[in-house]
Length: 349
Image 1: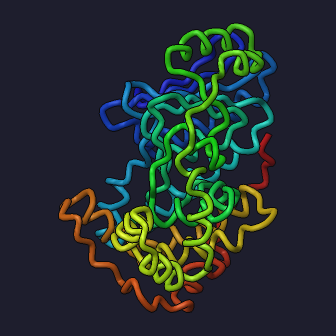
Image 2 (image 1 turned 30 degrees about the vertical axis):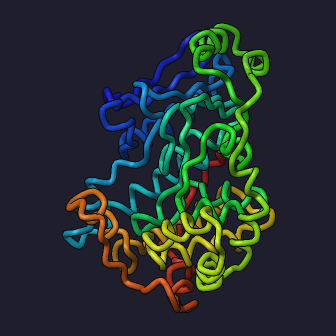
């Protein structure tokens, strides 16, 4: 086991602690594999009553995936590394979402991208005052993935479109309203709650520790969001934002204007296809169609260059914001044939 993740048994709980606080607990490929292996072991261990997941440090549960090596290899024309990383990560996400025993995640600080895949598919997703949850992938030329597209598709009204296209951050009340979290537990109660869960293996302790969540700013703006993001095409949504005269619409438009048009177009179509009744595997398989192509045919490498490598914040996207062709979106979402995401013959526990 690497020092980047702490996996152990504690009382009745299987415990996973993401342990890269200096990197905001960014998720590496090795960490994904270790989480998956632990879940396999605990599924067959009757002494493990629940799984408890948290992150080290004060700033983040997990701020995303560790994409430095993906960029390095992809920039050299090696797309296989990223594709294999994503495939293993998505298989872990599916196992987490389908796990038969209760999974309790403590989501403090930043929970973004890959962190959502680890922390937001379990049965008990807890947030405190520090929570900042987001799916900002369109800003780096990707799409909401790790099963995040499924969560967005299930959000009330057109909140999924808003969150997916803008990458807006959700505080505690917003995350609960949007379906990315379940309970608000004040941070001061976390240590005691973790100890009780480990001691008893009884998730009933969560209800006793939970408090009334803060009000959701997104809930208060639900009607406006639904109106602005009602259409299924990027052009129509952009025109609606341009035609609105509210500060909220102007801020949303500014976010959309920064992000990759192809990524946003794919996100809209992905959410449409997932409604209604899609499963986590449906979402992950569809996400993989885009991520598989994202380096070679999309904007992922350029998005990472602008945001992380050169940090010039001026990505040169392949498409203009206006007039994105439906055919370009369809090409990114086309079936992969033999390269399609394989969840394996083994049924997740």
